[in-house]
Amino acid sequence: MTSQEPPRRRAPAMSPEQRREMIVQAAIPLVSEFGAAVTTAQVAKAAGIGEATIFRAFADKEELLRACVAQAVRIDRAVDEIAAIPLDQPLADRLVEAADALQAHLERMGRVVGAMLASGHGEPSRGRPEPGARERSMDAIREAMAGLFEPDAASLRLPPDQAAAIFMGFLFARARQDGDELAKESIVDVFLHGAVKQ
Image 1 (cartoon, one colour):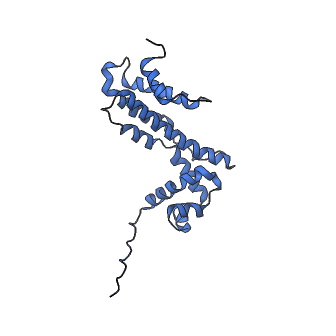
Image 2 (tube, one colour):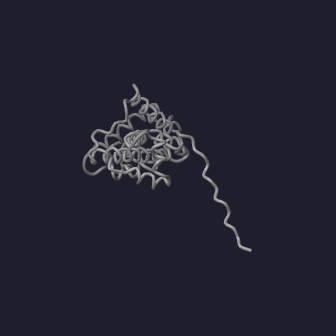
Image 3 (cartoon, one colour):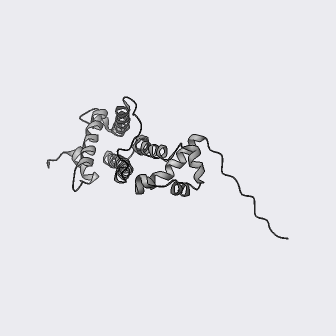
């Protein structure tokens, strides 16, 4: 008696929004590498789907590219990572983890946008941003960062939200500097203890 292969189980059906999200997640590493020169065949292979599925989810490749840029600049992931940092570890360790999350976000964003520009796509369009979208993003980061300071509020010279705003200024200034970057640990140490030896 010959054994029969068990029937293949079909992947669970996805909503149109889930399908779009899955395609974008597969496409982003390719867009980071090839910019606008990425092909829909490459994206389909990375996503494990047929190329026609891409065009059922997106009107054309340009819409897919816009969705990739929009996903790359979204701050949600970094905010979630900061909010998930355990509060029972020392403040310095919390802040280093937060710096890691923000740096990873800036690097993801930079790779995608940079590759689009380098491939001659011009200024990558995300569509018209909603009024106040940037401010809301910064507020979300600041709120998550302030949560990291809360357990130590009694020992702070400033309220947690103000301490968070200043620390973010340190981090974003570091991201904009040319040449060698200061280690995140050094930035946290100077922020917490000052630049002058005691």
